[in-house]
Image 1 (tube, rainbow, N blue to C red):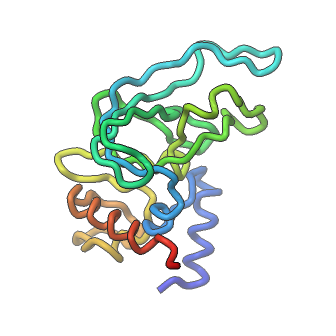
Image 2: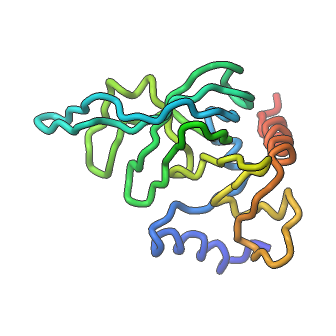
Length: 190
């Protein structure tokens, strides 16, 4: 049951601990612009970035990936590029070359850190992980590590000893079936 104290805790803990707020799986699926299982090909820095008179070197840390299994607004075999570095203090955006991961992505607004000017020249081609980097869920040994999703128990049995809001690995097949089911129910009815 979602009590007033629980909602307040979910709001305040990220502010105190400096972490992005947890979210519901259905909300993450609904709000992500792109969802796919991908294989990360490379992770590298891209050129220089100029912010007025300031030039940052060596540039943005980005990952190039190929879509293995599309779920939303992507095609199988399509390549994509996403930001693999923090855009603010509590951002955990990252990528590892060679990994397979389930990604929840949106278009990047061009911001690097609080107060910087958006970099419109990069905007069209780079995507950004949703939920401050927690939209990247690595797949290891057939299991997804779902991160900051607080309602996992609603969809998947919670192992013994795991606290209510604690994350736990979930079978990749089961997790992806649930994402597909949520995509169907998230579509607006006409």
